[in-house]
Amino acid sequence: MQFYWFPGVFCHRKSRRGGLFSVLGAPIVTGMKQPPPEFLVRPNPADPRLVERVQGTDQDGKPVEAAVPQERPLTLFLNGREIVTMMTVGDYPECLAVGYLLNQNMLKPEDAITGVDVDPETDTVVVRTAQVTDFEDKLKKKTLTSGCAQGTVYGDLMEKFDQVRLPRDAMLKTSWIYALSKKINLTPSLYLEAGAIHGCVLCEEDRPLIYMEDVGRHNAIDKIAGYMHLNRIGPEGKIFYTTGRLTSEMVIKCVQMRVPILISRSGFTASGVALARKAGLTLVGRAKGKRFVALSGQERIRYDADPKQADEESPHHQRKSARLEEDAA
Image 1 (cartoon, rainbow, N blue to C red):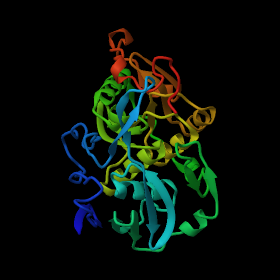
Image 2 (image 1 turned 90 degrees about the vertical axis):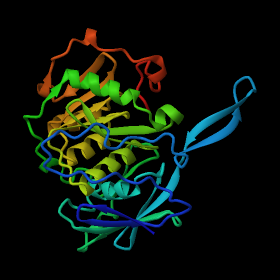
Image 3 (image 1 turned 60 degrees about the vertical axis):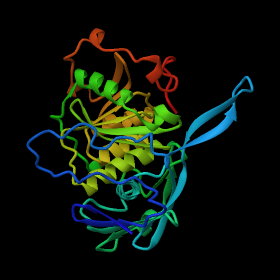
Image 4 (image 1 turned 90 degrees about the horizontal axis):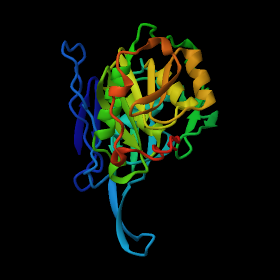
């Protein structure tokens, strides 16, 4: 049995031939005078538990070896009640479980989590709280979203949305957009190794802090939400970056996490834009190389950099359909 500690939360997981899931880094201590270092968490494309090598043939009938990401079931329990089975690449199950429950409003930020148990033998994760939650009511109503792997949102999609007040004094410099896009794009990742993956990054100014990937973008954002909660990281001064489309689901989750700025290298949906404008969220899409488009919250943007001085993306690091300016799926 392996044990892990988050501030105020006791977590443990059983091992299976050395353990299935990667281990979280040391907890972040709040109140640091120095800014946090870049990439406190980053993808590990060299982890053989996350990527599988598969033999096949190409268009000419020649043998090839392809790297493909893993996709494993993970069944989530809350206080002994089964909630959902998620398909995930398999890392950071504690963060995925807690973040999912928070973003589904089955857990409130003030709810005391007494433990998170992960068992790779049965592909389960159990989140335990000190008090009874009201998740039963959430299970009665569900909405199929446009998320990869057909994400499901339980309860009222707009619950808490109208209550959130995002800080108006948050700022986004265009130099930060260019720097973040370049740093994130050049960082070794499961996407660059195997494709078929989405990434989300919690940032502060021009520094990427927490970089999570998964087969669905909703999983990646839930992992970050869980990591923030378990490590007591606040949304103040933060920026959220995603490789996926700016859909209503992504906007709602970002607003619920109280992060005032959302950037994507992909495009928008009309519903996502409408909700961002309603919440006062700064929404920036199609952020690739020198270019980006802002459709909400433009008043936060400070144009401090000359786009002509920004670097274009190299062909090697371009993601799907980048050259055609199409939206990633």
